[in-house]
Image 1: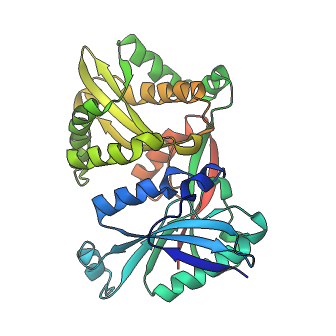
Image 2: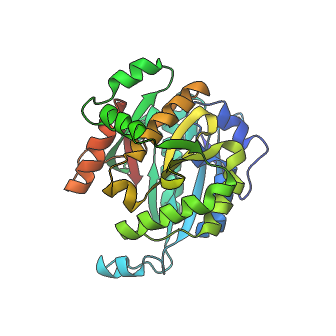
Length: 323
């Protein structure tokens, strides 16, 4: 029998338990919870799953979002009333410490979420793929995928896994054009934000404030958050943020200038290669290219999938979770 302990603040060993599990990522840390609170006004709950003896056998950072205003147009169009409803969401969880309790934890989580009478949007960790599918609990699952690059492999083997007609060629082109990659410091955030704003404008995404990036850096940098900028003749070309809590690397905001794109500097390819080299030096485990739809519906989704596939990582299927 599993019981769920719900806390408004994490216990002292919350992050330590994540570091003791291969399923612990930055998305389940107390620091990212604070980031969600400040930036997105989420209300966070820390769920501990206890066995009969009171031992913690799993945990989950669960965020509650008020969707009544933010998604008003979407709800009107879909004829869904959001009155008195909330969205409960999580990324890469739950983190389970006792494999023998997997079914019981997933079952109790289902009943817990059902009792909230809200919308649910979660995702299991790629390394625990099948966790929800094999539970036979009536979750609504959507197949998703990512590509994992195993950073324990020799650098030359990883290089040879890249598509030689695109990835390897583009990296060489970028180097020949004297593109230089440097790790970001806090002083570089203004430059990164400028490029990111240009990228968001071109793709019609909501812009991110510089103050948000500074909060992100202050809360997450010490537990494993950084990024890289590409330069040519002291002019910025592109950037990419990464998290690396528990030696598991995830990509964040891709930033690319119009100049990089139009003059074909291929800075993003060189940045990725530098992240791989950096990850090998740091003895990190995996570089997660952070999501792609294996059942792509349009040319944009297909392009994302094909691009990530070219990096030679292992395709891992996992599930997005609803109720």
